[in-house]
Image 1 (cartoon, rainbow, N blue to C red):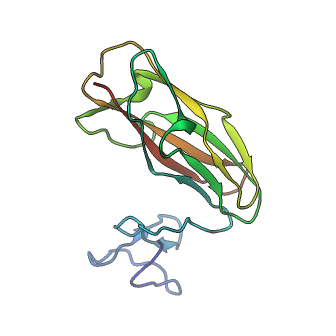
Image 2: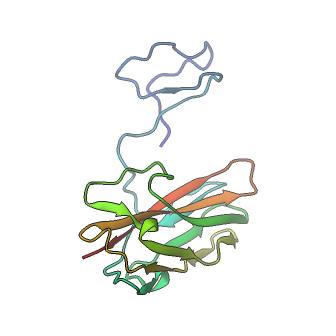
Length: 178
């Protein structure tokens, strides 16, 4: 949600924000915007001209035994990529460490990509307007016991490519190690 409580678009932006305002100031622009402090809980997917949806935001693998593989598309709630724009988009799918995605780990979590191999096939999808696809791939956990007792976590990234505006969205993938 983009919103502002006040706007000085005709006279320039304010240099000192009031604590009641939720503004972000661009150093070399007059664009003033804010991000809602609460997550959007709407049941409808986002829409727009350059929009993709990657749901669910959190994916939970029930069990990931050492030396075994789990197929992403067979999960109870598989990861789904949807083109909600009015034109064809190409999307690159990748597994990232939480650190590289700018996401923090909790004390009971460890980086999945250090203990498991996450492969998404194909790595790039082209979707027509309104098209929806289930993300396919595998998670294979090595036999290392380094993360026992922690949940393994990684981030699945969907990045729109070949467009002037680069859009990237994330879902987090969790797997318990017991």
